[in-house]
Length: 313
Length: 295
Image (cartoon, rainbow over all chains, first blue to last red; front, side, top):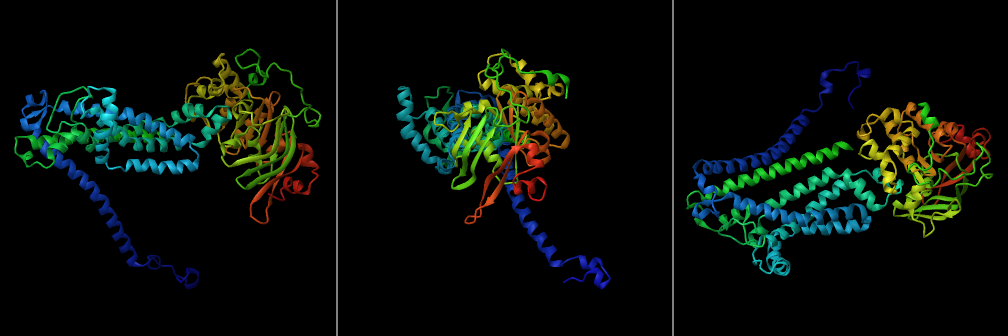
């Protein structure tokens, strides 16, 4: 035991220094964790840099008239970005028409209506849905959603179509939206629900007039993150939307089309020829950078909303 | 307290359902014998369980009209549990279950046909922590009337409720501001105003001042004194001085430890006029508690 100043009569700086090894050990541990954190940031930075480099080459060398043509055929030098951008938007809109109501509805049910035991059963099932490999869902979209739903609704629809792809992406996005929205609603204090019930409000009134307005920032965030996920989804679209080689400009969701992600995947998948034809290779990086910026913007704005809801309580 | 708050009373035909305002009720004599006027609540051998845990057992008592009845006692003696049986708030807890009867003007609140939503419109509640909605002051007050489908003049209800809760003068120029910007004491008075806006007959208060400073507490106590001419109030409090100051009737609860399971079950020890409870309690446990020797 260290001598107490009262007993030995002296208290020096030496006696309060502690063991020297301990300091070294702590600083080593700190460096390891710092390295882990720094690496992940570094990787992100490298990704952006590699995108930006090739994208810059594309922007500086491309013939600008080729950016506004009738379609996206990069192998033929037609880089009509609006075709695949609109393709992405169409798929995302369809997806959010599925994931929005389904995800929000599931969230309201899980948070407000389900008894605790039922919630403990349902939530893992929902999360299993989130774990379905997107390639499996892509085949589901192509072989079931497209013939059984889309072509029944619209017999003139082609087998490969943006609608089926969008529904598939929506199913894939639903668990994410539901999970975030449920968290937002569950973070609304129980005291507010009690206040509402205490005034004779029914459950449906309490959910719609108290809980949902109080959680609205989180719900908006859930929706935005859903959009961001839907825009970034690749496999389902690559399989179910068709148009692998390129796509004509198309606003009809019952026709084949291409999204930004699918365009990148189909160009890069198993073809040595990608590099050959002019700026084809670089165009993919340009699209990638665009995608990156869109999702970054969406995620940052979602983060803002989440922070706003946290501040309130 | 502003003078107009003292004189303003709910009037019939002002948009509030004419449920009580124009119905003559027997006026209980202040501090009178509770048995002499018809009680608002009669609890008959009431026990409350959470799952297999017995939280309160065999409580029988009558709560008189237009008086302030206080529930006092140490922590964990079931005061809040019992209070929340009076407007079926315990229904929100899945595993809660009652045995015995809660008669409200002779009607069993736990009858199968009784809708808890209707019960809570007549029996309002103010909670331990101020819990205004994250909406404007105006929207907080109008929430209840809108839920109840009141078509009348909402502005009038807002003003009357806020005046009744002695908050009008402080907030009349910022009714559209968020209620979250009010101080704790103002928020609690807003919650009282919100409860008054649906014109209940009874107001249950679950330690309404426990989160407030002494000045804010004093204002709430004045307010309770003020509104009890129109409302029956049941208040749970940890604060014996508060019970002595504001209540007409007082119920002392304590917890008995169950030998086998090491859990506590609340029991009603004594229920009487507040003066009697504090000056001449019949039960030794009450005396120990109110003189500060226990709890």
